[in-house]
Length: 357
Image 1 (cartoon, one colour):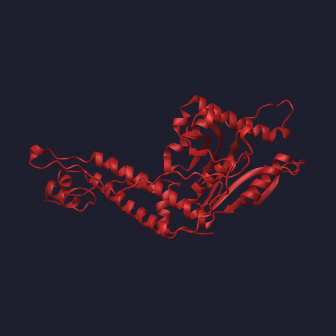
Image 2 (cartoon, rainbow, N blue to C red):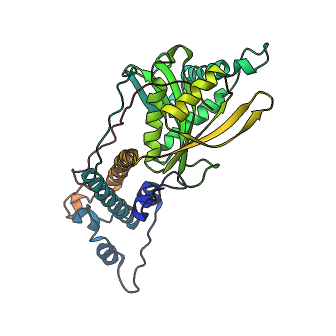
Image 3 (tube, helix red, strand yellow):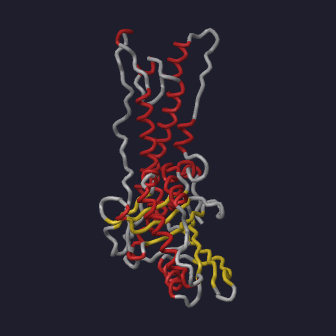
């Protein structure tokens, strides 16, 4: 498979350990003052070349830590901008997805905002558990009328993982219909993970693909899958899924056709899950295409640029300015206006099915 270049790996990191923006914002630099040199002269000489910071503010006594952080963030932003320009100039031909029956469906990543809404948590939990029950009821005891795949606490935990933004490893995607995300508009969900503990480096994962029972067969699952795979394509070379398949079972046959047919996954390992019933646990993988990899990296770098820009703006607000009474004109810390927020989420759609493990 393809291997990311060292420069790309550094910029795209974030799924394992701290991401690049996190490392830069966590950095600290201490300056030693030479024996015999005054603190004022040392500070002035050590910060005079910090890019993007006006000289007046530097002389006013901006801390070495703030200067070092801004230097690192600015350098990283320049690297990201350079990589973005290269990607934009090398854009491969784009193959638009097939026309969808789910053109009014939007997909977002859940956060603590949704986790703090009891009605939203209840909606997601009920939708997931109901969909799993419907897919498994033929194999359950006749008296069992419910199935718990997720508890309320687990739904909350998965939603809160999205608070880490671009640094999040595992997230919960939420599909909803219309312009407003609310419990009544939710029609599906799924998870995606850059690096689960059961795959090697470079192989991402998605699962928990669920569409509301009354919304299945309308292309919503494909909208979710495309959103998750675009996210994973920013850092992963392969994607893995797992699901249960029972030959001859109508629901299982639909999953097989969708996963290993429409979506292009190939089974790399399967074994009997329920002896005597022929049920298999199938582990499937597919390679991320060059086109999807390009689009995924482009999207991730645009998001990273937004994060770096936000952190630079936050540093600007922390920069001290001198008082006019000191005889020095007040000079605010200004950032270059060319920084552009390009974090618009790409929305996808097509045709699809419902839940997997």
